Image (tube, rainbow, N blue to C red; front, side):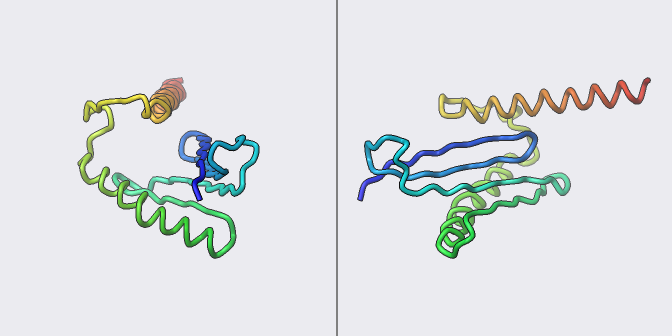
Length: 129
């Protein structure tokens, strides 16, 4: 059966994200969702080049199997490959080609940079005050 898939994403800086994947009959009104799967994600740095990535899913065997397959077979290998290819360089140092589909991710990166600068400025003010 053909279905439409909806993706909703909420990002709470610096490292919390809620991804909701929903499915409905092709062409159906978005209020007629058949199945919805919320998946919270939290990333916590351990040190340079190493982070802990926590995620969760519905507490049933089928949802967990699906989420593990997606994360283990798609997300994790992609995250690790990107980290390896970046070789310690920042996103902007790589002079990326940014396309329309990257708009939200670029906005998030810029927001995070702004938060970091604000935090650094606050630390400097406290140290010199």
